[in-house]
Amino acid sequence: MHSTTTIRRARQIAIAAVIVALLGGCAQTKSFMSSMRKSPSSGGDPVILGAPDAEHYLQELHDLAAGDPATQAEIYADAEAGSKLTSGPQTDLRFALVLATAGHGEYNPEAAQTMLRELLVQTTLLTPAELSLATIHLKAVEAHIVVGSEARRARASSSRAAATEQSATNQRLATVEADNRRLRRELAEAEDKLEAITSIERSIREQDQ
Image (cartoon, rainbow, N blue to C red; front, side, top):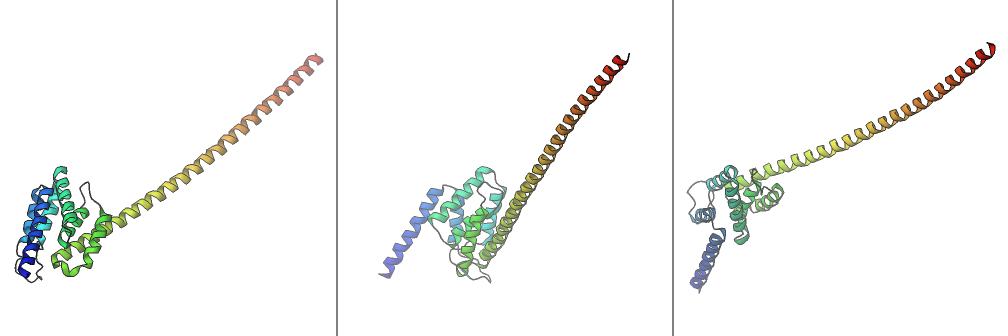
């Protein structure tokens, strides 16, 4: 009975792996799944069955950062499909690291932050290398989010200051224009008075003559 259950479970896992490979349709899925099937190398780190080593993550992130848009889109789509179809600590970490890597069109620090925080709660399901990668990238996206928020606040503050300055400038211009209209009106009135006085003086002189 136990043997039959084990065989059935193995078949289900194999079918899921085949579905991921078919839907992904790219070498990244095959490489990632292959690395998860390999036995972990001997060393001081605790062994977690199915966990790829850090080199595999780092190589894919390098390919993502340095690749052309087509390569980047392929890696992203493959990581997203792996996380959705065979969700687990390793496939979710892979997708979170892709989201947390800047330089491609699907870079999403907010989504990466959420996923990485959730993954770091599952410390017993991740190797020390995976925990280090998750922690480092979480700190990076958190810093990016903080800097982005500060930049938006600075732009908003600058926009408000510019609007206030523009309003003050407009008010000063309106005041100057009003003063100019008043001075022109007073000048015209003074000229009319001067012309009237000149006309009266001319009339008096003509009478005297």
